[in-house]
Amino acid sequence: MRGLLVCLAVLAVCLARPRETKVLFEWKQLTFEGLPSDLVYNLSNCALAGVKGKWPRLSSVSSDLSQCVSLFTLSFSSPVAARCSEESTT
Amino acid sequence: VTIPRWLPGVPATLLRVNPATQNLVPFPSYEANALGSGWLTYVQSMEIDSRGWMWILEVGRLNIFSSDLSSIVNLQPKLVIYDLVQRCVLRTHVFPNSVFPKNDSFANDIVVDETRGLAFMTDTWSDGGIIVYDYSANLSRRWDRAEFRGIANATIWENGMAFSNSAPSDGIALSPDFNFVYFCAMSSPLLYEVSAKQLADFSLPNSALKITKIGKKGISDGMAFAKSGVLYFGSNEENALVSWNVSAPFSSATIIYSDAVTNEWVDTFAFDGDALVWVSNRLLRFFHGNLSTTEANFRILSVPVDSVSYVESGDPQPPSAECAA
Image (cartoon, rainbow over all chains, first blue to last red; front, side):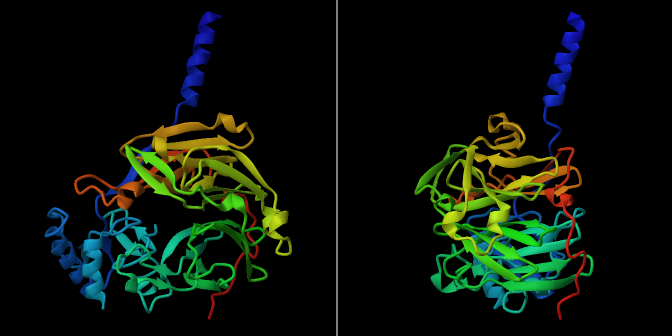
């Protein structure tokens, strides 16, 4: 009887435990694709320009202009990159 | 996912994640997101219903946190319904200024009752508000009540950072029977419930709306219901994800995940089959100008919850619609 109670208690604890949580994606800075090539070019420059300011060098800045590594962030954006890109898009 | 255009220079506001590269791809296209020429300006939230309609809530405002005041633009907020199956816009509803004032609103979050053709949205600006859109009538109305207000200059603490704010009605969730809307202000720990039927009554005066205080849940941003009747929300001062089965007392609400690193500021939720998916985004660090240059700042997490989204309880009406001209 005692063994059964122990088993039930263990089972209850196991059922109550949260299931495994996974981090599906994570970003330090966001990367984009599918942007026009001229905008990508300017954004890449902006990312590099940002290096001169607050942010460290981004080793992952792509030389392939089909992709862009920027300082824009999910939900939020860096003022440094923001100024650059604003200039680039006007 | 969405990227707020709070500052100049965000290339797109509505995007999808390319899982192979982790890059963000403008959705449905860069052209749709292009400032000045695209039909998307600044999307804060969207909801996808069971027939594949994406209800896109447009804030209409640009660069509201820019120090360059000349860069701020206030356009009229709107709701765009985009059909993911036909890949076209079905309808655009521009909110009247009396519903979402373009200079004094923040169209924040949205939930959808596809059976009755209703959308419920929060306004997270000034004294807050709940806005209702009726698809059949193509009309919207606004509710203003004291419960939508936040707490003036409330101090939020997370990971040793303090943040003072007065943000009003923010998180919103719709019960899977579509009978109740739950909402909370970002600056307040309180959770409220209101009848969806009352909210959808456009003839009812503000004062007649019955709002019930459910309990103290901690500081949250977004919320979401599963079809099982479990409500999920953050307790952000604890870096926690909390679940509460609404059929049980509110005191039974339980932390199901907590992590000071990966779960800093639980923001918004979605479902992927039977998995709950959410964004954590270190919001307070952004406001402090202290996002990390060496660590991940933004994450999408998931946990199996043995249920699907509340929208799967619906019987979509109409089942389909033609693309707008």
